[in-house]
Image (cartoon, rainbow, N blue to C red):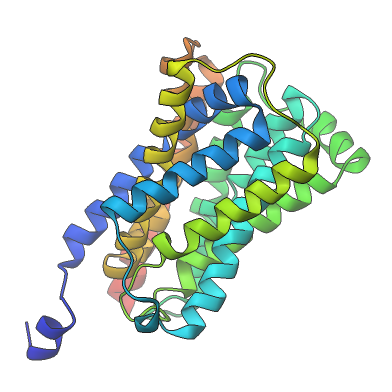
Length: 312
């Protein structure tokens, strides 16, 4: 370790990557907990409360550096992508009119691991010739696995899904744009940040946008006063979401982006598994087939990365 690394607070890449991988595990609890909150408070109010509690938790446990230390370009570009992603996902789920649409919108959102792998191969460092082409087979296999796993007991009806997109395209468009924004955030912001994680800076912006969405949605307050368990679910959701983003930000800044990109395919599969445990659902054959495809796609991407590294 040289003097510059000591001065900048050098972090071993393997440890940082492990912290980033922890985010994927933590995020797996998010869907079930957010659903519990939404059932008690409503979709828009629940989201606003979760992110407000997340801001408080981050200020206590993950205090940001003084704003003057953050590069302005990182604050502007990274902040815009972060806030847009969170807002678009919240809106897309809220605009889904049926349970089937919610599953389909979630599937579009879960394209972000595929987009992240492809973007990392295309513009990541170090650049390697043919990296994108080597990443495509694993990305296709893993995305097919996500479709099976997230599709649930009935699987994904492609014909019906296309009909839903044609009749009401806005939720799907928002989910896709959000997925692209998040993958772009993960790939391009580490080089802008000077090693500083802006999660705690960006979170208040998300909370403000979500409160605006709630106040203009006409959703109103819940009919019954939520009990202690509902408020506990708000705090738990905030801890899972805010903690996951803090872990992820640390990982992409100091660890292996390409390792995290490949591992991110596990996010939706773990989310479905955790939701099944928390909400008392059963995992059927389509889920396990999808999980195997996700593993297979991740292995293909890992092998492609190793092959590319040996040729470099």
